[in-house]
Image (cartoon, rainbow, N blue to C red; front, side, top):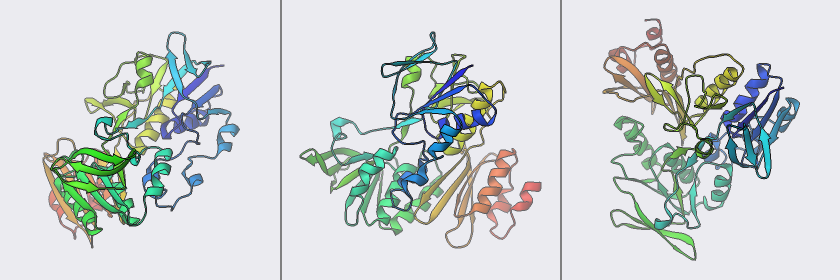
Length: 403
């Protein structure tokens, strides 16, 4: 009887093993996770969980009984230190585990500040794992002073939660504007105004020069423009990198993550990859997506292909972000856009539609689920939308789906 080993007990790993059993795999399954917790959802960590609005148990993707009832060997708080593709084994501590097929769902790692500028000081936090949030939570209190480094979605979400808990927030973004790498100026303007309305101090075109501390704990920051700030804690939101350490040990090909084919197979025919760590063919090139939907969908396709389905993974990218009382929903990828059409709704409802030539390629919708839904369906089906109709707030969008 064959044995499938999955390394990485996050969203992708949990989805993959569940799909294996759902599709009738009767062999042995081992899911190995470095954290001591059951597989859990990450998006609420820096939002509802940090705000105290979600209990730990609600984070778990499935109860512990699911794994035992489905005969899935769940090995938590265990770190894989080696992979031998020739022998088809993985090393966990002093134990050697043999596999017939191996899946890497190792996710991604947060980027840290260099120690040379104070990144090792107490009170400097990243936002990725449950342990990170638990370490930071006691500092997030009314009257505290926080520096957020990075104006991407991670930094902005952390800033929103801190501000809602009464923290005095200063956010610095080295680029000319927040969200510059991932969104149009219109979206940046929207969220800059939103954060400013809640009292957050957003500083663009300025970065962190160094942190200063006393007795090993951060107490201040010097910005690149010479400004000195007093801070009680720092949140670092400067991006994540695919976790490829084990893939490198195994000698797998890398290309912005673990390189896979359209089926999710790596350069080793017995090793697969899915989720944040994996790059795959897309639209004539290669792409790596950092999102929950991708982790689930790609992992399920990989599970099916491990059982012989031979299905290509065709990504339909979508993302979301919650900040204050605003839900941002994003459909598609805006790479290469040359025009943005604004559709205003009631109150603060608005959506920005990205075009490349005449083709609709992405939509950012703020508190506008209807615009998001229509935009996503159009993009997924390869259709476009008349910009004049989109810009007319009184026009019904649904007929666009029938065009």
